[in-house]
Image 1 (cartoon, rainbow, N blue to C red):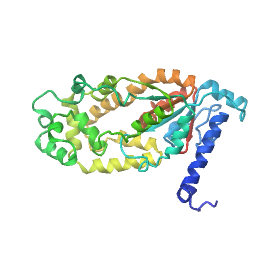
Image 2 (cartoon, rainbow, N blue to C red; image 1 turned 90 degrees about the vertical axis):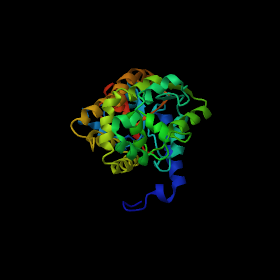
Image 3 (cartoon, one colour; image 1 turned 120 degrees about the horizontal axis):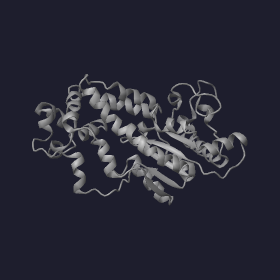
Image 4 (cartoon, one colour; image 1 turned 135 degrees about the vertical axis):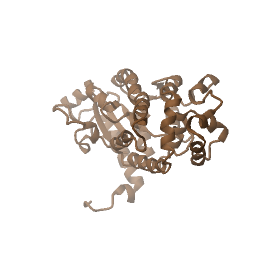
Length: 337
């Protein structure tokens, strides 16, 4: 096929999906990083990796080999091995597989080569009244009392699907989460739900990296009075929510997680007062959770046979899970998806 020929993933989607699934199956069976050459720097072990090597990993699905398996594939490249394979998949909390340009056939094929689904927390985790303290304000003045009536009116306009009574009581972080997810409320068709159903169909065991309380505490780690400043400032430029959601979707579709992280770091629309608050919230939500998950992930991935599914933004960056695992000797291979 010439350099300017139409790519087969557009002209023959079924055939291309089947071919990728076959290559994935062969790679899993042989323990050989078939696609490593497609990602410069992805399979480096002998030489010192370049600075910010994590920027070169362009995917949302990664094969992860523990140090012993990575060394074995160097010693006997091409030889069959019974070492169970690991995958790490980066999820996103809005959009469907078609919109996200995900090949569910390849994802299911990857999952078939594993024996356990490892995710953030159980999607069917019990929700009781005690957990409402994380997302609902206790003050009777509600959210308008924190951000003002004008900002609250703008919030209602942006989130028409959320009942005014609920919106009135939401903490600022919860309102921001809805805005950043295009107002979509988690349902049965989210990626996390799909993955749990597939795992159940394949009779895979499931393990969670944190409890629901731990996750909610991370989301609610900044006092509402401070987080309200971030929400109020972002509501002054409401058009940015739609623009940023569109860019995030494109970063995910193009498998450019590093650009997504850059977007978060830019903190567009926030001034010098709000930026440190946003930075603290981001550390609680991303870096601190990565640190908490890492020891358990290391242990599970060394066993092999894990399909790990966490928010994609946890994977990228110098403090991202992939880079931290690479520093521990794991081989990271970006898979096409």
